Image (cartoon, rainbow, N blue to C red; front, side, top):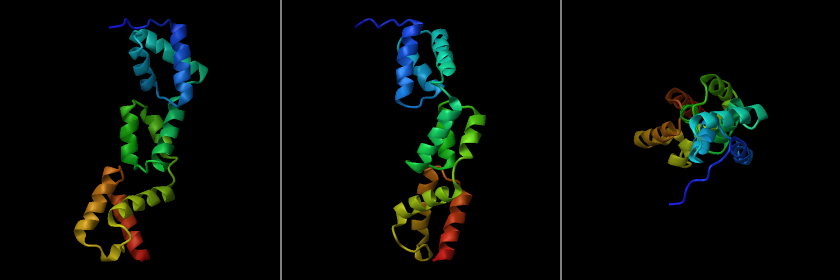
Length: 160
């Protein structure tokens, strides 16, 4: 088994800067990567401190981009986004601020997107109960709130 490469703080910072420049990262991801390189926890914390000072790491910026990407690309709901951010150990304040950027109209469209994936183009007014429940369950697994799902379905039924 080859011996792991030993990095100095300066080498680790340079390598971590390129790691952060490629894609927005959170502190936990960088910490995990730096310790994976064989650095001690106190050295990893020092590397993270230097990255924050240089602007390579920013928790609020990461949270905003995470929310934006998961809402627009993955079409996730607030609950699943919160769970993902908490898993990455983002502060509650940053999570709250980032969630405020979600557009309500886009959120409603995402709910209908997931419902339509399960029911197709059938009108909501003629759906049987089991198919509607299946669509609601699918939408719940994507992190949307139950009461909001029901409100969106009611609005869509009223439009038809």
